[in-house]
Amino acid sequence: MPRKPTSAVKTPALRYLPADQSFLDPLREDRDRPEAAKVVVIPFGLEASVSYVSGTSKGPQAILEASHQLEMFDEELWREPYLDYGIAAVPEPKIAKSVPEALDQLEGLVEAVLDEGRVPFVLGGEHSITAGAIRPFARRFKDLVVLHFDAHADLRDGYLGEHFSHAAAMRRVLDHADVSMVSVGIRAISEPEARFIEANRGRLHMHYGFAQATWNIEKIIAPLAGRPVYVTFDIDALDGAIMPATGTPTPAGMNYLQALAILRRAAEVSKIVGMDLVELAPMPGLHACDFLAAQLAYKMMSYAMSGTKRR
Image 1 (cartoon, rainbow, N blue to C red):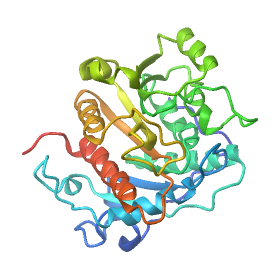
Image 2: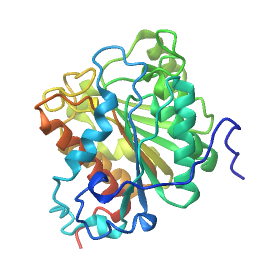
Image 3: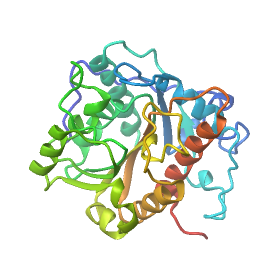
Image 4: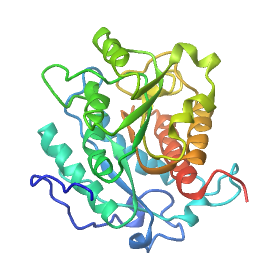
């Protein structure tokens, strides 16, 4: 039986954004049926522990607004894939100032979506949100694996006095004993993180940015096969040249199509049960980054819920 949420966590009744504030085209066919949607977008612009450039609190709204400009037809899948699953979005709550309290809020929202048998897609906000979003999944799935795209390992045991810092996001995920992780694109780690990785090789599968030229996608996704998967995508996994709108735009990152290739195969070999996309810090006048993030979110949803094959 799944463990119950802690008493501090409230599971709210779900309310939905109107179509002109939701995800994707406001005129899409399922705009008046949010209760039937299989994917529920949760905007959660927590920004409390950023340590360099700020702005992630504005990321969810920028992604929602940019998504209205996306084409719903996907030329790779040769259909409008959202019609296979349906999309709704809930209003962003008034986020608590305390990171632990904010994570409890998000846990409750994710729990509410899962209780209805639907798939949550959280739009951050800083990466610390994953520590709250993952809790209901860790309760439900004994063999959960997290597919983690990032420039940073995020395996510090707290940072600058904050136990739930964005720099500790994946360490807090691994506080759940039954959860393992595949990290892709890592190119910024500290010495204590390196020691933690060496001590946890059975649970952690690391794919570093410097080795991109020799990455084998089948090797990357092998630990996901047949398992429930939660995908967390820090936008700074992408190279800083194409994604400067993030707190730490890091060189030597992935390109967009490379990221899609891994996501596509992950969806083919596993069951994706939840997702988040974090760390977009919109830059005034640079709408391309917001659009890229929105397009990436739609592709993640579609691979997971509609499949990866043209039909």
